[in-house]
Image (cartoon, rainbow over all chains, first blue to last red; front, top):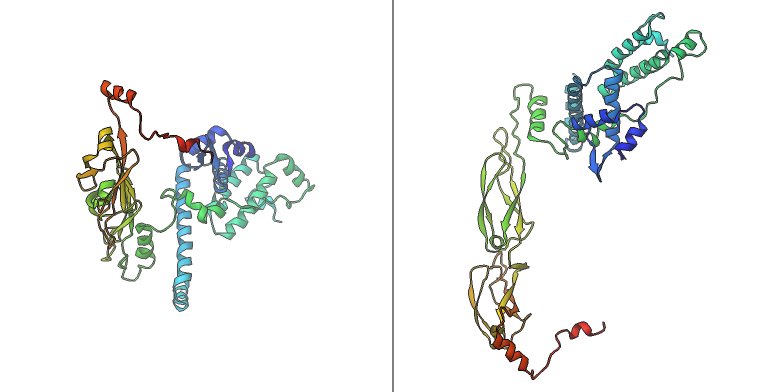
Length: 106
Length: 307
C-alpha cells in the first residue's frame, strides 16, 4: 500500500498527470484516503503494465481501453475457471472428475 | 544464450528503429500479462526483452558486435507481475462487473452451465435456482412494535408487501420465500431477505419488551395528583397520577408496551414524570416567597457527597 506520491517517486519516468488521467478513466483503481490516493500491489503492477502497453508496445491511449477491457475479461474468466475447478475438486466424486478429464482430453 | 539478432529476427545491419519495431511486434504477441498461464510466452518474452535490452542500447550493442560482451546476463528479472495478482483474489478489483466481492452471478452460472456443459443437446437446460437477494427496509418504531405491512419496491420494479410482525427489533431479518432472483429453466426463485431498520420515535423508547417515555406533568398534577392522558403505542389511555409525585417518579402501565408476540407476554409502558412549571404568575411567586417548607430539601445533595 503506497500513496500516489510514493508511486510517482518510485517509478522513473511516470508522469503524474498521465497517472491521474488513467485513474479518472478508471483504468487504475486507487483508493482515496485522507486526501490522497492509496495504491495496492496489483495497482502498481497495473500502472507498470499500462506503461509497457503504451510505451513499449506502441498502443496509443485511444486503443488502450479496448485492450484493458479484453484483458480484464480474460482475467475474470481465468478466475472463474479457477473457482470452478476448485469447486469441482471439492464437491465432485473422483470417478466423475476422471470421466470429465477423459472427455476434455479427447 | 541465443543470438539476440536471431531472437528479434533482425540482420546485423538493422537500424535502431528496426530494433524498436521488431521488439514492439514481438512484445505485443508474447507479453506474459497478455498471455496469462502461458509458460512458453513467458519464456519467449524473457528472450525478447533481454535481446531488446542489449540491442536497443547503441553502446551495449556495439560492445556485443565487437564481441566484448555476450548475450547473457541481460535477462529481465522475473519477479511478481500483474498477472500473478490479476489471476487471484486481488484481481477482482479490476473485474468487468465492478469491484466484486465474490460469488457467481446468474450470468456467470448461465455462462458455465449453459455453454461449457451444454454441448450435446441439453444446452442451458439445467435448472438453476434463483439467487437470494438482500434488502433493507426502514420503518417507524410504532410499526415495529405493533406490526404493520409495508410495500417495498425492488430495483427490478417488482413490489413486495412486507409483513412486519409485532415486536420486530432493529436489524431483524425477515425472509420472504420465493421472492428473490428468478430461477432458470423452471427452477424456483430464490428468497428475499429483508433487514429491518427502525427509525427512532419522537418520545417512545424501546427497552426490550417494555416501552419508556418521559411524561411532562404540571406542578399541581405532581403535587395534588390527577388523571392525565398518556400516549401508548396503541393509542392514548388515561392514567392516574398519585399525589406527592415528583420529577423522576416512574409509573407503570401494565401490558401497554410491546404487545404479546411469539409466546412472549406483553411488555409494560414506563412513564417517567417530568414536572414542567410553565409560565409563572404572581400568586405562585408570592406563595413561594412566604413558603416555609415543613421538610426542607436539598435536591443537589447527592452531587455534594464525596464519592
